[in-house]
Image 1 (tube, rainbow, N blue to C red):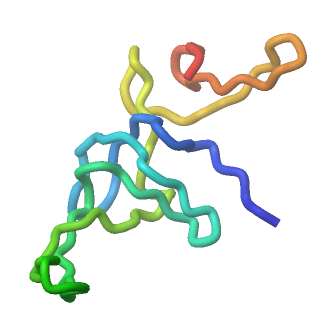
Image 2 (cartoon, helix red, strand yellow):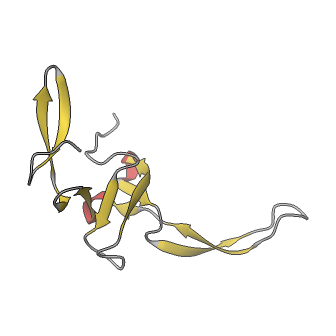
Length: 104
């Protein structure tokens, strides 16, 4: 069974723990099996890449490594990093900011 996370692709998040604490970025990918997210421009690591063909260039590439989902907080447009709550809007469940109540 696949886990459901409150953070989704294209959400703006802020890192709240680790070497990139305080930085913000957009979620590129959510990996529910590993409880991690990949955020653009955050947690950059160097990786050795092998040449695949004669024209292809190998060397050291910088890629975004996954962050644990507990180390990021979603960012509200009004009040900054916050937790997520839910409200029922008719028959739909809508994500809202816990601080100000605005839709996320």
